[in-house]
Length: 125
View 1 (cartoon, one colour):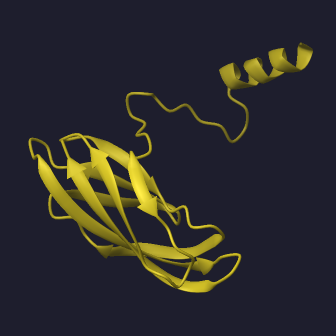
View 2 (cartoon, rainbow, N blue to C red):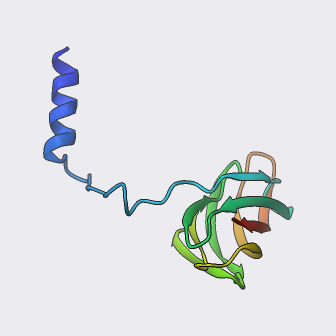
View 3 (cartoon, helix red, strand yellow):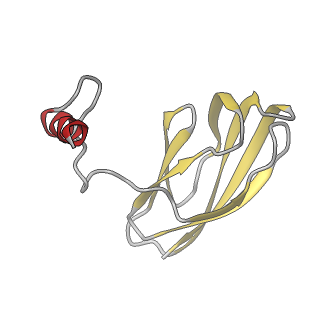
């Protein structure tokens, strides 16, 4: 009981290294259906996002991502690299239809290493 009070207080006061993020500004993970292969193999997937909305696209290949970059920019939205494993996709406002982008990631997995291109097909509602 005492530990939970300390944890709650640390969350309220703000423990070192923590930061407040407004729920209105935070993007959630993109609803996605992605089959990620091992490093060294290319992957494709599908995401869904509302017109003018944004969502996070984390690279979830098993292992360690050592580098990543935008390989193909989207035509009907913006793709922003937040860190080596997370990208933010924002669909163009008032656009409904499809979009496509690709991310190139290099890393080491449990069974393979190398560079993979992850091609993402976005459905914008």
